[in-house]
Image (cartoon, rainbow, N blue to C red):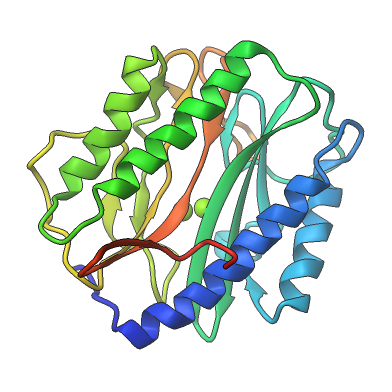
Length: 249
Ligand code: MG
Ligand code: MG
């Protein structure tokens, strides 16, 4: 069952989203060659608390950190640690924040210094795919329209969409119904209504779509070792169309 949010609930989620977005900004500013992924995590944790939020991922099913930090062929759910970022890496940072029991969830992939043309194009296409999906977030559109928008942009560029992990409804829990696949057929699936709030999060691989999990029980990597990018916004469907909640404004 999909839980619709009232305008008042959406405004609380917008505050959670604002803190999420600002945490991603300060982390992005700290992404330079030599920084460790644990240092990025510390920066986010301190920022979120200062802004009056709580980290949503810390302790979630036992996850040990504030951020998921996934480098190069890591797709999602990377655990921050001693790894130092190097010139030419790409780093996906996923962040969640709770305010008054309501969640915000967003992700971005950042370049570390100068990156390859392929890495740059992968990040651009993934962000474009998210934008295309958000443009479909209007009353009367279907979940299949959202997934199809992502898949179309990604596959036209010659990249592939991860199948095993998907976006999600969000509100008083980080993960609510419905699941939001990044693939699908237009005109199928659940109908979007005012008050629907979705975390839309294309995970895009430069190679094949297959992924596998590492022995740490969390980190997901591409099966073929190709690069992967991840962008996510929390988006409310309103009478007037999409309203992105994970922005700083
Ligand atoms: Mg996320
Ligand atoms: Mg999410």
